[in-house]
Length: 431
Ligand code: IMP
Image (cartoon, rainbow, N blue to C red; front, side, top):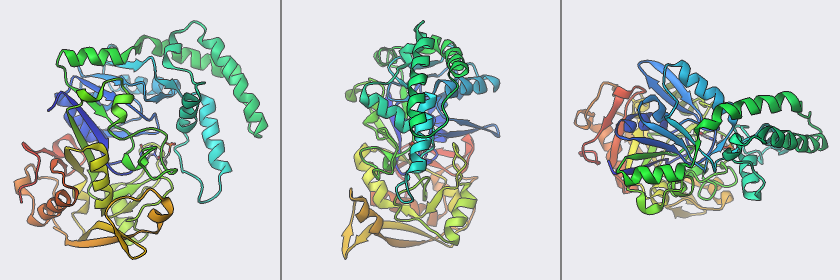
């Protein structure tokens, strides 16, 4: 593995990144989150126990790997404190292994209130379907240059500053007809969380650079996915950060010339939570079957995910935007029972064939997928440990994905456990 690897979601998030990161962490000294916040939900299954992480990098389950929450992440101190407690409860050591960038912005309770309020105020067709974790409003404050950063957690004036901000938020909440916060108990709760988190606040950009100079291996863990990126996703139905590979640099302080390899994570079919266009969505029994077999319910909100066939247009676009060197393809086993599996190879719009994702949402929403049908392999794949043992029909499905995207598959996941993961000695499915 290159010394610095970036792992990104290549679709709309929920590609199974947590699991792939967990497998790759075996070969990393550091795992770093660089964007998003506790809108993410990374599920890791270890020895049959299921763990869901929202803010802490999944590397925490592989001591002694150290974990960083970078400056590009927005951090809800109450959520982070609770998550640390849960990880500790699972018997995992956290002290001296988890570092929070002093430049990361805080998500405060009023950000959540504004997120929910804005969603309620928007009409059908306008609503984003956010996770209501306050992510958008926290990034708004960052860009507006009025945010509060993690460095403040260790400031003796933190309780005073929080009271001042809660009072100011109450004025806005009252104006919008919402219930105000009870300032005193909330300020106390936040101050207690600040005191707990303060020892892990550090200049993580410096730390990571030092680690790089020592030749230690760093793995960047992207949250959400390329199609939810604020610049390259289906704007405005996106999250508020750069989920793409470039975000790893701005979100951590590690310069671009340190990045050695980019792994894109793709699900063997497509899902999306929240609103916005989704060309291969299936609103029929096949879509329901994908949801049922794949257990497609949000790790953060429990919402049912919208499901559809594999979209090679999206994958090709992601390959280019992120500079993907190899794919980690997940949940191939979910397709085991299907008689036919379809791949969308292009879009059709107004009699024209489109090979990439159009920026104009109205165009994207009107695109019709052009499908290629592949016969299903109709046998269970979970026990498979080598690509050579894959049934020929499964192999040809994978080879076709490689051809259509121009990127080889390096990791294949055929089940939820660590043991259901095939890491190819060299990327590329043998035809
Ligand atoms: P927000 O990030 O909560 O503002 O939500 C914006 C959009 O991103 C919504 O469509 C969410 O459903 C989606 N989203 C946010 N986080 C995730 C994630 O981790 N997986 C999948 N979708 C996500």
